[in-house]
Image 1 (cartoon, rainbow, N blue to C red):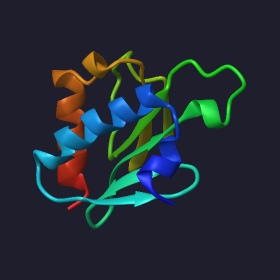
Image 2: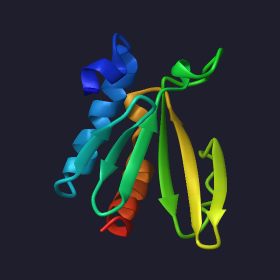
Image 3: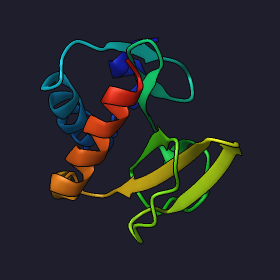
Image 4: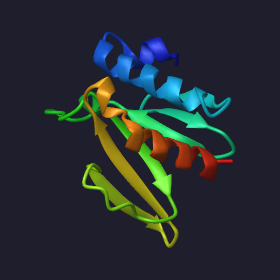
Length: 118
């Protein structure tokens, strides 16, 4: 599956993805893996994963969700959901509505995820 096939005619979600891709590219080269359900930025491990809630939920609250994994829970109220997946792994889900949502805080989280995926 290609990025164009994944995003289809959802221009908002694609614009958000492109903004995230630009930020990830500032750190270095990452592989992009597209599947039916998500797009992953990868190094040795996933740096970040995005998915479109509209593909799964009847009433999605955001066009795109960014998922990052950290060894500790981040207590920011911006996270839609944080799930502990192992003793030292927490997945953090962030709803993205507009490109301006990818602010300095999100860029910092992306950088931390980049470093953790080496």
